[in-house]
Length: 139
Image (cartoon, rainbow, N blue to C red; front, top):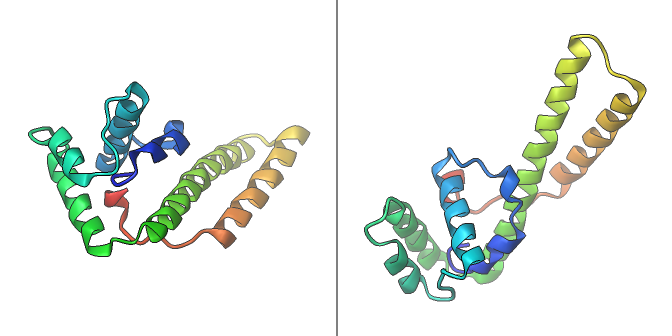
């Protein structure tokens, strides 16, 4: 997202943790992209946009890491992997809620069917998910 902020349009924003520093930055970037107030294609402009802000340190660290790698194809693969991870977390959250309900009184027929569907989707995502190239704090 740092090198290609327009990727923000593909983010499931409801799945991003705003309390996490990387998640907060993603939401900040997505908001700027949505309002048309985000430079793209030039990390220097991006650094200027965040100079003096609470995001400056994190943006600078991510830009430095990206400059070392420099492969946009790998970055796109990683971005897709992060999207998959966000969906995986959402599925796991729904599965955990159904597990809790099952422990506290049982699931109805539709809930059991949804539970099986969620487990299948989670398994499929886990099989095909590429490993991220950078850590969670750099998302």
